[in-house]
Image (tube, rainbow, N blue to C red; front, side):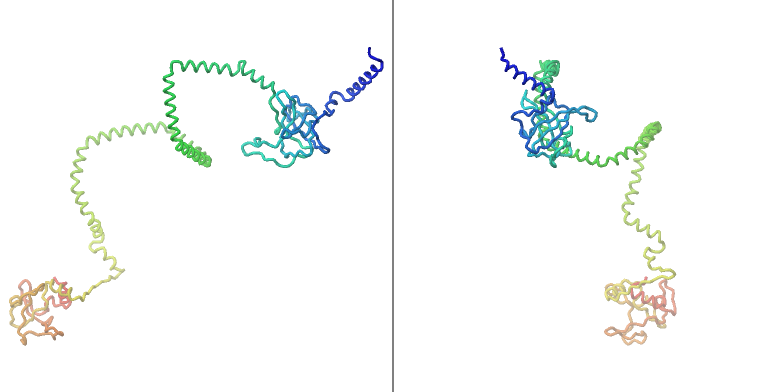
Length: 441
């Protein structure tokens, strides 16, 4: 039997527990600090994080940074975020725990069947997307909020076992078994062919490996081509847009194009027949034309010059330079070279000096001739020195006197008719000069 005093004590304790439970409720028990909990310090700061699911996370759970407890969970509330329910977790963190402003939060558990806790950490650099890693910035202050985009939770043991159960019971295992059975059925009895196939595949892969540099260059060239095409997208679009009307016109004229090609085919047949029938005649004409073309080719250098002369006939082409308006220029070249003078005298057809005209003298062609000098025609023999019948010109220094030019004479023309008076060579001093210069004929 329980003593009376003990009964009174038990009643008092029961009454105290009843008052405590009725005053605080079930949630009030979560506010009771657990022994051995994390040290939040004298001036902790609060951080709020939003999760889509916190599993069975409860207040008084630890808040860790790098697996070191730096705070605890103060409250877990259900709120609405973007039209869906989410969990709002309020945490109390020690002021010595420094975290960046863009910190992340995750719900994890200590072991496979352990308790849940909240991990605060710097950004992992993955959520930034392809534009680059996310770098820590700023400092997490009191009252800061971590949005749902930067929170996550780990997989539960129940979820892992459920997924494994689905895989075993009617999941991918059955399909893997079917695949293996089909592979065995396909390989049975074809071991030799499979071995040859593997050998050929090894040779093929070896060839690819030996040409990997060329393949790499081809891929790089294709990459450059793709970049060039991408940079010219507007021009290609414009070209394709402009090509559409042309294709429409071709489509409309398809019948005419087909008719043209058919007519061209018939024309080709007729032309081939004409060429075949006239082949011998064409060859004969070409052979007959060959001598004419040969002579034209031989006279190719002189033909352009003759055409120039034909256009300026009867004047040569260089006569245009002499005619200046209503007058013409005359270029006269006089050479005083003694060798050229002697050559002109030797090639002249006129006598060097006219024969003297004396009364009763025989014709010039009946006079005795001196033997011709080399390159000079024979000269009529003059009279003896001192003969008064031959008038002499005053002698030049070192030369004997020559008979006078242009004296009156009675001679005989080239046709044998006598002529009287006048002057030899036409009775013109210019003709005498021309004779001396070799211009006579």
